Length: 120
Image 1 (cartoon, rainbow, N blue to C red):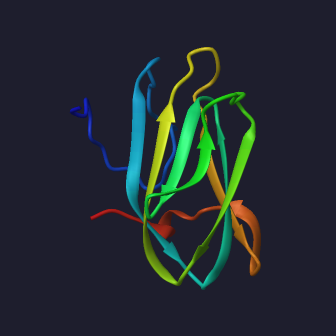
Image 2: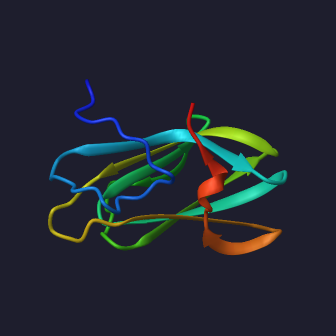
């Protein structure tokens, strides 16, 4: 498959992107983890979505998924940069929403800051 459009964004979000039904959007890059530990990621989307870190499935919001619900997944990560991919498939029956949050034992659930994301 060839991408229709390639665009750099500061963080995974569908804000400002006019999504079309049956298209899949891929956000990929690196996430900078500040401290060793267990991290819980929360993904709220209006379409089917997946979160992978180092190729491991952290969140799989596909089968039986209800738009607008929050899906969670946890993974143990070391301090430093980790490859991250978020796949999003827009459902034309709802708004265009994709929100990713994180939390750990050292901080409560919050939006991941833009400076935690990097691309090559």
